[in-house]
Image (cartoon, rainbow, N blue to C red):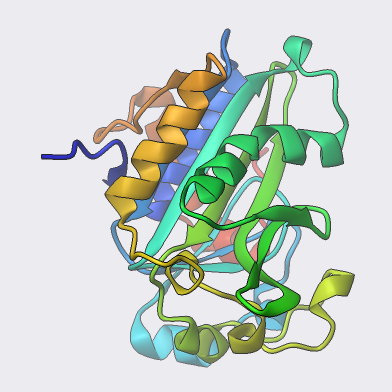
Length: 253
């Protein structure tokens, strides 16, 4: 039986753990993966919820809204989505923002290649791929970055078997888009990895390959703990469980 190398984690807990671990720093590049335990929309740090989201639809359906500590755009997390990340020591990463995205998603790109999908970095931080017989690039993963004193975090979410049709229900057309998107709707722009592969892949299969590629780079592999430590719990209570932070970009004093 295949071992699962990802955790099913509440998105707010994952956001708190990622920030806490990045602020604390790591001595070795550390990769991980997790699957959302519940549906949530996650906003980029500087985004305005009322501009990017259909708040009425989200409130009616009881979908959580969380603001992460990194930049980038809003994403809908739920079934069929796999989240991944790498936390890298600052002193061993001689790279700017764009190159950091490329380096710290390279293991995901190589994992996609193992399933016959040629993923490339598009825009600043997307991972995209062409459909068979179509040279146009489609987004399969969105990524974001957080840079702190001791470490750099690059994290993202890859679509495996998500219900892309509901994206437009909760997410408005983004206020900022990469050039390669043009005016394509969410449904016209996003693709599941399983729509591009010859054989269907599971969360466990993709995570195992992402982990294998991370270990090839001599990165550590870590799982998000089921129970937060004291520092992570403090972040949860101060930020990610508070409407003031999630909806109004309230800053900590």
